[in-house]
Image (cartoon, rainbow, N blue to C red):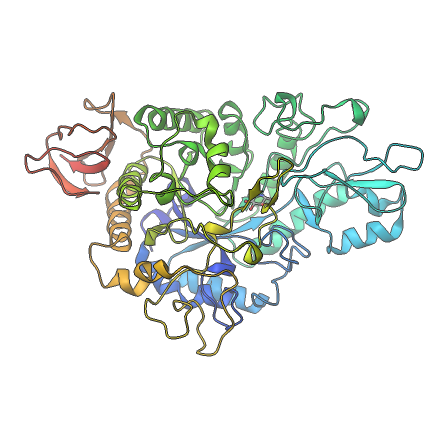
Length: 569
Ligand code: NOJ
C-alpha cells in the first residue's frame, strides 16, 4: 500500500487510474473487457504504483452510451460479470493496497430502466412520470416539442412518447433525464451510494454533476432560447440563470449525499464531473458536499507555458476556496488522447478546446500528428503534473503512450456522438481513445492479448497495427518505455512528495516566460523543484540533484525544449 493510502483523506492527493472496463482486459473471451479482467490485471495496476482505480460504468445497460445509460444502478451487466465478480475485484484491489472508485450516473437513466418503462405504461400525470421530465408538446395535438432545446449529442433534446407528452434527454434519446425534485429519486440514489459503499467502494465519480437541478417551471418553456451555444444556455455559463446547468439548488443534493458519505469510516468521497466555469468549481468540492471536482483545465490547454501556468493557478485557487484539493487531468474517455493532441499544431485559446477535439474527431479530416513530439511533451506533462499538490487522474493506456486511433471504420463506431451534423460534417466521436488495450505484442489471435481465452470474439473496437509496439509486454521489456517512465515517476511521487501531507506550492526563481518552475517540500526534509521548458531555447537548471528528467539533458546540463526535470536540494 502507498503511504498516501494509509491516510483517511487519501483521496486528497491520490493517483487515480481510470479503467474503462469494456476496453481494459477481457477475461471471458467475448471481445468485451470485464470485471474479472480487472481482477486478473491487479498485479499490473499494483506495479504501476497508483493509489486507486475508478471504474467507468459496469452496470446493466443497453450500452448506447458506453454504459452511461444505466438500466439498473445496483447490479453488474451480465456481459461484464456478476456482483460476486465485483466483490472479488474489490477484495483483490484492497489486498493490493488499491482503493476503488465507482461511477454514479444520476442525471439520466437508460430508457430500459424499470422506472422509465413504468413511466411509459402509467401515462400523463402519473407519479411514475414524475420521476422524469415529461412535458406536453406544443401544437393542437402535442405534435411539436415543448421547446427547441438541443441535446448534447445533437438533435432535439425532447422525444415524443405518442400520447402528447415528450421527455427531456440532454444526451442520447435512450438517456432520459431524471426529475431531481422528486423525493423518490433522491432517496433511491442515496440507497445506491450505500449499496456500493457497503460492498467496499471507497469513493464515487459523479457523472454530469452540474445538471441534476433544473428549472423548467419559472417561465414558459418556449420562452427559453433554443440554441445551447447561447451564453444563457451554455454548460459553462455563470449558473443561476441557466435552467439546465450549474444551478444553485444542485448543491442541496450534494449536502444530503455528504451525510451518507459520513456514515462510513473512513468517510467516502466523491469527485464531480462538472463542466462549469472555474469560479464555480470549488462549490462542488467543498467539505460539506462531494470533496473534489474535476479540474479539466489541463485537458483544455495546448502546449503553452502561460496557459498551463494559469491552469495551475486557477486549480490551486479553487482548492483553497473549497478547503479541499484540486485534480489534474490530461486525458479521459471523452477526449482525444493527449499524446496526439500535443503532437498537432497547437491552438492558443483554451476556449477552442472543443473545436480542436471536434476537428480531431471529424471523419475525412486527415491530420498529421508528430508522434515523437507528442510523446516527448506527454512525458514532460506527466512530470509537471505529478509534482503538483492534489490528485492526478490518469486514463488507461496513457501509461503506454497510446495515441488516438483515428481510422476506425464508420460502421465499427459505437459512440452516439458519432453522427452527421446538421452542417453535413461527420463527427467520429470518442471511440478513438476507447480501443481495447494491447497487452501482448505478438498475439497470434490478433487481439494484442486483450482477450484471455485462445478462442475469442474480436475486440469490440478494432485495434490498429501500431498497437503492437505499445503493448504491455513490449514496454515491460524496454526500460526506456513510457510504462517504465510512469512507474518510476509514480514511485518517486509516492515516496517523496505525497507523504508530507503538505499541499503548498511556491513558484521557483526560474518560473516565468517559457518556463514553469515550482517548489514543494519533500518527505525527507528537502525541497523538490519541478521545471518544465516549453520554449525552443534551453533552460538553466536550478542547483541540486537531478532525480528524474523526461528527456535527456543537454551536454551542458541545461534543460532542452519540451522537457521536465525534478531536482532536489
Ligand atoms: C459524461 C461521461 O463522461 C460521458 O462519457 C457521457 O457520454 C456523458 N457524461 C453522459 O452520461
